[in-house]
Structure formats: C-alpha cells, structure tokens
Length: 256
Image 1 (tube, rainbow, N blue to C red):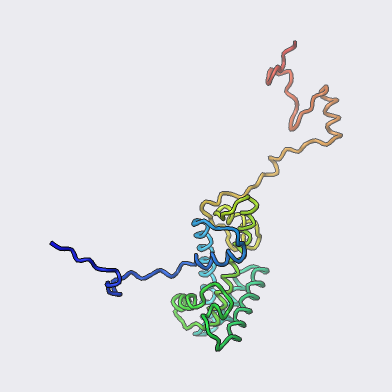
Image 2: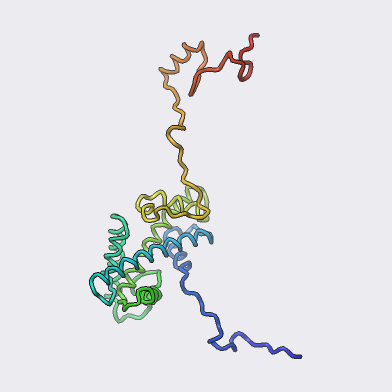
C-alpha cells in the first residue's frame, strides 16, 4: 500500500550506471576558447571534431602496437608514439606535432615534484591521465606516462589546427557559431588535413564549392568584341552565335 521513496544517494554504488568518460567535448571547447574566443560550436560540429580525433587516436594506436610487436618491447614510451606520429601525419603536420609533443614531455619531466595534475604539469588542456588509462586498455601492455603526455599533446595540436581553420571559415561565412559546414571547409581547404581525413564523409557539411572549368563562360576581349560587332551588325553574342531572325526571343524574326 505504501511506496518507499529511495534517494539517489542511498542507492548502492554497484547499482549505479558508470559515467562515460570518453567524450572530449569539454577539452575541445577549452581549446576553442584559446584559438577563437568569440566563436561557439554547435553540437553536430563537436561530434565531427570528436570523430576526427577518435580516428587519429585509432591510427596512432595501431602503429604503436605494430612497433611494439616488431621491436619485441612490452612497454610503450614516447619514442613509439613519436614514430607513429611521423608515420601517420604528413610532413609539416608531423613536424609541428613532434615539436608540441617533445615540449610537453620536457615540461612534464622538468616539473617533477610540483603539485598539480599531469595535464597542468605538461601545460596541456587534454587529460593525460585519461589517455594513459585508455592506452593501457587499448594496447593491453604497460604504458609509460610520457607516452600519454606525448599523445595528449599531439591530439591537442590537431584539435587546435582544425578549430583554427574551421573558425576562419566560420568568420568568412559571417557567422559566430561553428557548424559542420565550416569544419568541412576548414579540413578540405588544408591540403595535409585533407590527406588525413581522406574520403571521410562529414554529415551536414555539404560539398566543396567548385565550378568545372568547362562550365565557365569566357567573356570576349575588346578586340573580339569589335569583330563581333562588325560581323553581327552591331549585336554582341556571348558564348554562341546570335539567334536573331529565327523566331526565338523577343521580337526575333519579325520585321516592323
């Protein structure tokens, strides 16, 4: 007859649903405020950037696993992550990603003994501890903390690169909210990012604005205009001969 009201705090921990800590939306938003403080990002654009980072993470982990197996090592360090970055990224992106990762590892090692989180010690916005746990679960091997620092720095650099180009495309469109369309224009407009993305489909991004050269009508020059005027009795025709006198158009073929 009576219903017993149970508070959420009174429910045993084993019955609670575990929280999902795989989303990087919070850290992507922090990087966005560093790159473009005046812009915001939509929910769908955030999903596009998260999927892009997830794809890069999977590629890097695949290369790291192959390197560990080929070298017969059981522990992943920053050296394996650096080699994977050079294998996955094109030339310039690989150079800057290696630079960011090396600086992050150096800051982390020189700040030994100081208080604060691993990300703060490395000077990063992305969570180092979370990527350390994800790497151990993904590789099923022991992972050094410098490998997680290097990986977090690489992903944060890629996020900043994509958001900067997408923000520039957003401002070119005279908007203040980043959409999948602006993300598409930002990625496809950069040659090396386009190589990384490959033929990936961005939902809601549309297509690249392009007009085939065969469809572009070339306007005649001044000399050609003069010859056209003389040849057609004072009438200028663009892209074809004049149809006057064939009964088409306004008053065509009618003599008054």
